[in-house]
Amino acid sequence: MLEYYLPIKHLHLLTVTLSLAFFVVRAVWSVRQSPLLQRRWVKVLPHLNDTLLLTFGVLLMAMLSMWPHQHPWLAAKLVALLLYIGLGTVAIKRGRSPVTRAVAAVAALAAFAYMVGAAVAHHPLSWLVILSAG
Image 1: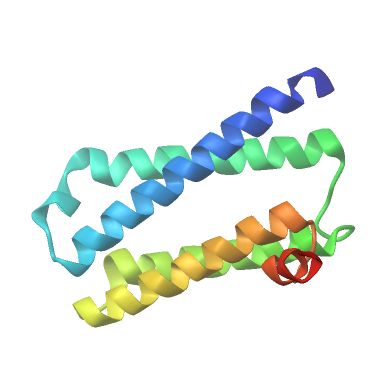
Image 2 (image 1 turned 135 degrees about the horizontal axis):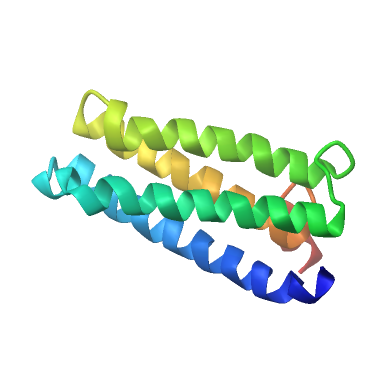
């Protein structure tokens, strides 16, 4: 099964990139109260991509036998993922005003950046470890 590691990792990274792009576009449209946010593909495609993203992530964890209770950086990344999802719903749907949605979008992007740093550094301190090593 490890022979599939690199293709799955690259698919995971592709879906991460698409997820970020979909989020940014939808967040901007939400802040601007754009009717484009109501298009069918906008409501379906990001969720399909995020399902694939999560599937590839779980596959990678299983292939490498890396579990959150054994790797603090992975546990922290998953907690940040829940925070990102919560903030994302405020940024795109639940925020009552454009300002609230914009602040939630920026906070969600910070959570996203933290997740990337934790994944790159394999450490719960994320970018702090990378920056202090440089």
